[in-house]
Length: 232
Image (cartoon, rainbow, N blue to C red; front, side, top):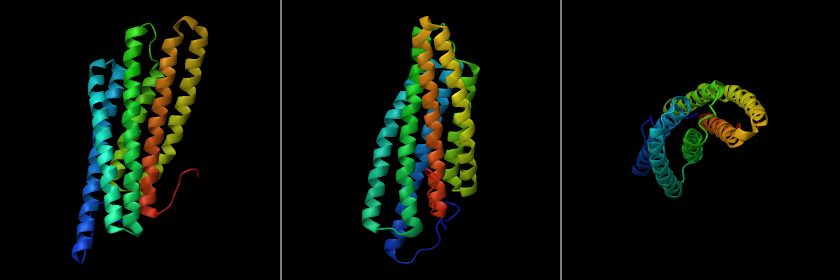
């Protein structure tokens, strides 16, 4: 089993193993820092949706662009480590986890920007359409899921990861209820169709963000236990 702290390694013998551990630790820390940045961006997105803080959307866009650059750098560095040191066992799982989670963070940042932009478009073009409280509650719940996923990278706790995976069902249920409500609104208010469709799209993107948080949790279980939970 891997260390409970992903970058706390025991003593290594020989120059190359020690160097390999240091470089793996460095790329893992970059991944943790990327997660912290994406969580901050999602927090601003949720403020835009729930409190109308539209001035934060420009920051969300800038941070999404920086996430893209960081995601590429982390992937390049991880592939270099794989080619140079040819890690095995838990070290190989660790690098595979970096590649998987790195992509999840990039997608979360992209989806957060989409949700924030739709909140701005709704406010500007369809001010008569108000996001229901259930959608705002879902946005806050998704943020908590992503914050929990970030904590998993620090603790590498497989038990906590499994609890987060189980919690995703609650997000799915909330999404289905919100989708049903919004579809009813589109039928009842055809003159406001475009506004309700923006909210439907936002709900879908929030649900997808939660799916990526679940994906991060699954990656942590794989890292710690070597078990692939996807599609099970």
